[in-house]
Image (cartoon, rainbow, N blue to C red; front, side, top):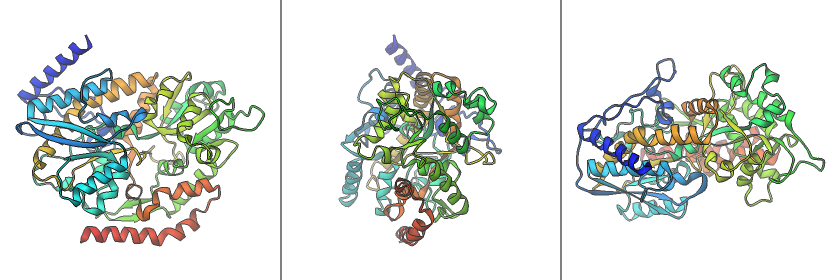
Amino acid sequence: MKNIYRILCLCILLCMAATGFAACSSTVTPSDASGESSATADGNNSTVSETVFPLEKENFGGVTIKALSYETEGSFQYQTFEIAPLAINTDPVNDMAYDRAQLIRQEYGIDLVQELVPTKNDVVNTVREMVLNNMDSYQIVVAPLHYLAKLVAEDAYHDIGVLENGYIDLSKPYWDQKINKQLSVMGHNFFVNGDAIVSDDEATWAVFFNKDIAKDHALAEGYGVSSLYDLVDQGKWTIDVMYEMAKKVVNDNGDGMSWSASSDDVWGISAQAYDGYTFTVAAGHTMTALDDDGYPYITVGDEGNIEAFDKVHRILNDKAVCALAEVEGRSSTNKYEEIVQIFANGGALFTPEKIGTVSNPVMRNANIRYGLLPMPKINEEQDDYTSTITVWWCSAMAIPATNVDNLDATCYAMEALAYYGMEMLTPEYYDRTLKNKRFEDEESEAMLDLIFRNRTYDVGIVLNFAGDMLGFYDTILISGVNTHISALDAKRDAYQEAIDDFEDQFLN
């Protein structure tokens, strides 16, 4: 019955594509929820509807467009098939991606193929070899931002925002407007994501919380509300509130707090060093920003940034409350997996993690009730909640500079992937799989909308200036000593020199 339903849906979509009329899209999806083009002037969400594939119908005669990605499993399985699965299977997101690829092949004569190399670094090495030898082996690259960015200075990609064929329209709601704006270095857009893929959404940061622990300690009631979700709705979900709640639930079974998933100990917060950065961004402060002309500049030394990280450092280094993976689990080779296992076993009230964690088999088999919250604000006066992504996993799409002969078909295919992703793939992933199957309450669903609407990218973290900007906060947090000011003083010149060199390479 499921396959019959799928075939009927595909036939309907093919008919609509052939006649130029597609089904109306009335839901706010992750890409348009985070995009300025889907918001009203005052910043509130509006319903986005692109009822017709915007490009004039063309047929490219069966041309093959290859997308390069890498092998992975577990929480990030979508990266292996989100462009063009080999076949249908029991995963509904896989099957919808398959249907989308078939539609593009049948309607526009573009045969999408997704090929995988073993690791993310292999993606980098493959593209580098292509560029050095002028080989058009792959027409699209799909990989996390940290790895894509390694090749920007090597002139490895087309600037998607200025391609003359006009097939890709980055102003459309199915492209993520935040990445278009916040990573548009000197007006160049080398990376795009949105409804074409779902792995970027999986890499968005949020706070998981144990509902049973919160209920047993009447945490919400202590703030005069019936649930933690109410605090979010009232704008009162702050890092200080999170910390006070965390302190109330700590439970030492008598022999000292243990970093072990089998322990009966309960931590207030189970986190990792990267959270020094994620909490600081949640406070509204990135390490770098772009000026009006798109030139990067350093913001990590700004007063608000310093104050935010000082508070984050104090909280995450409270060893009586917070289990930092790199400290408590420093001898473990699987410390990041153990963060999830500890939470899933009821060993922590709060765990900041990527949203894709819900697809982890450990979480899917957990015997706890859990919910999802946005990253907390620094104080109630902060305008809105904001979350960042993990650059180690947040995927984007790029077009290798060696793609010349098939560039038109590639751009047409990417626009089709994004548009039909909005119509087909995102609803399957976001509404039916993520919301309805991974979370048991409507409140967490509302939190997802809020989290995706306010996602932040940091150009300095993506490009990793001087080779260590990405680890700046991590190192300080792991040391246990807040050397924020002195560390920045020691590195500021190197960061600025790296930015200057990067700009010179662009100008030359």
